[in-house]
Length: 338
Ligand code: TYM
Image (cartoon, rainbow, N blue to C red; front, side, top):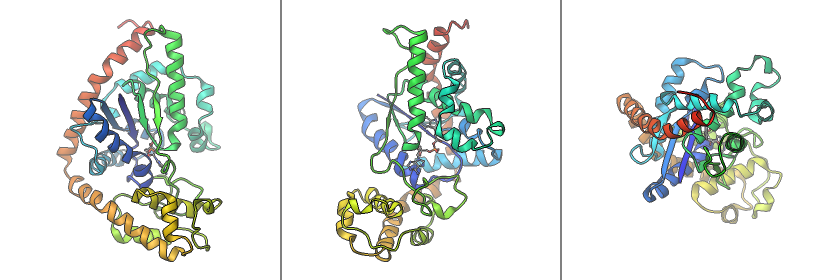
């Protein structure tokens, strides 16, 4: 079993990243490394340059994201934790896969359509070929399982298509070059929504900080964001079916459910019939209680650049070794003489 996943170091880790992906990274690390599986978790710094960015911020955010991931429970002794920029094999394999990926496949990617918007002519080439780099990220390590939120599902499907076509075109059925990876998406937290709009996902790129809970927010900020979260005037229903058509209510109850490890029906059995005036303080307190230990560990680590850089250097060294056989096989399959 090979577990591989990445996150862009473009700002704070927020509750959507945590519940949709990072909690699963930690759970898979804790369950599977003890049984001999390898987990590779990386900062997708190369993906981050597909949008306009400030170089000094990228460097600072990269270190901060390492601190945040370790604070969440990623253990650099058990998982391979690194940044793409220190493992050139990612870029090399992307170029090799550019020969296999089709323009039509990339044109259909919803992230490309959303981020390029109407200004496709002005979008970077990196934004367009972004999913090919993402395919390289996972295929390079023969990933079998990729823990992600729902929004990355389409990119993972593309990675499978690229792997399949490359194997068909350049390898024998008996000795494929790439493994087809399976996305692992948590059913309850696949899509955590914005606190300001229950139909938009919680995201780092939302200009309003009120739309998300950052893992580094202090207790007062968390309580204030939850209390100000957009809701409707109705009381909470007593069964899950009553959340239909109530996107904001469904999101808040869903967050309460995953954070408390209970199911939605049991939350509604407790809060059904009550208004948000009662539910929001309970949700805020639960978030503060669960996130406080992570924030404390993060604060201890974030200034220690020597330790953070050493974690990345060690992780990159291991990743380069793990990547080499697949990269060599891909060059050879294409008939490239080295
Ligand atoms: P990124 O940095 O946007 O997000 C990191 C992870 O957090 C998940 N996520 C969410 N899950 C639920 N609800 C939300 N509101 C929410 N927002 C974010 C994402 O699904 C993701 O799992 N392209 C990727 C990074 C990447 C990658 C990879 C991932 C690069 N190469 C290879 C997996 C495998 C991205 O930008 O994620």
